Length: 347
Image (tube, rainbow, N blue to C red; front, side):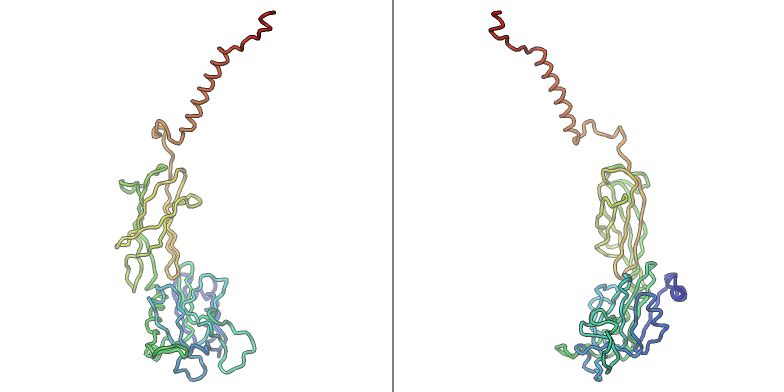
């Protein structure tokens, strides 16, 4: 692990919130680079000649942004447009853990104001990040704001209206947006935990005994979500259970109740071996939830088979048809005699 990650506690599951600006220094840029975010050079700003605010002073760097990530657990439900004035960032395409929390519009670019563009900018359009985040594989979180002013009382109490927008001004959404993002970064939102994993045959008490092929089983797990600093029942509708033996034999959605208990029932596959009940839930904005429980699945005992197995009826039929065919052939062979021709009778 890098010295920066170790120093700031990311390797130990710590969380970091950083705000930058157009006078960003090298230490902040180095920290951002360690987590897959490149901050543009000192003195540059995000410029948008189409979506700047009506109160802009002429540089078109006071912009109105509303391209939020779809993960409501990070930005809240239906966030309002926010004011932004600061430095732009770009995500490392080789780092899939970076989250585009707030992107610039398609007409934005990053450059020094009032200077000729002689080189291609760091990023343009929706590839330009205004707020970036990253959740490591150990669930440590870091958020980088490209603007100090975005977190200021001035922007919290401001009104916004993009130059190209129709309609009147509206209150800026900076306060709610930044509060939600910081709460997420500090794991006051979007943290998941599980408990009370149970499995059993239908109608029986939970047990660690081996299951038999084709048994009807039930599985349940309690999942809780950290919401506004409190643990509450998680109500996700896309949590899946896999019944795995090397590859999943069964994959089914778990159905939650109001207390966060997720349940599902299914029939054990007709293949014996060592299986796992596996819940592997990994969604943007939530901590990685992973639970496995190993069980054995045995075949039928000799005394548990039916006398006649329906699936074996074709084999029964083939055996009896062979016996019948042999009987008919033997009867014909022993008792049938060809008629003697007349010419042979005369001789």
